[in-house]
Image (cartoon, rainbow, N blue to C red; front, side, top):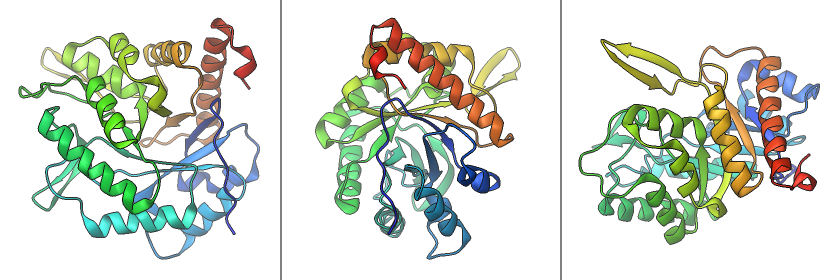
Length: 290
């Protein structure tokens, strides 16, 4: 039977990639948990599920979905939701999450995590989707804030208020992606600090940290959430700001493009641990750190 672990609040982890399966199992690292994308493990069997089961015997696992289109206007894809639920039931992960994203429309998969318009109608529809997911998997799901590049003209709710209300109405948790906040704030022009302060800390159950790149189009610079590099200092400072207010949360480093060696990933996670521990101590809560 698969071992079931909980993830302690002060834990740090990384996204588990196929080239690193064996190194993760060998245990020559200080990582506390691993996260996998659900869609890579939805088969009926085979090597990916065998590796996942082996890792889960030693470490907590977080299942992170990317294709349910929770914020979209279509009904949820019932077949995809069933496969997602089957994986959750099979692995009994410590955490389960998805994006506040619009990734399919009219039955066409968009192959992107587009931010939905933040309106009362979208909120109502997203609440319905989250209720359906939680009912199907029989447990709480965490919803992650997206990265944005343009602002919808029809928006009438701020993103933190949208997420807070979604959590209040459905009982879901939040996965706070600090890099996405910084990217969106830079691209659209709002205060990342105000966003971090406005999110209901009690609903946040996991944090994502990642790298991004700056693309230039003429005289316009756009930050792109590519998960392809180290966590920048500005994102690290925002992370510290949230931890000082809210206390420790499981923090995961995402690195999905130009994947580095396992040691580099583990080192990025240790930097996150140092930032979290330092922030806790500044608030006189050193007893909560690792």
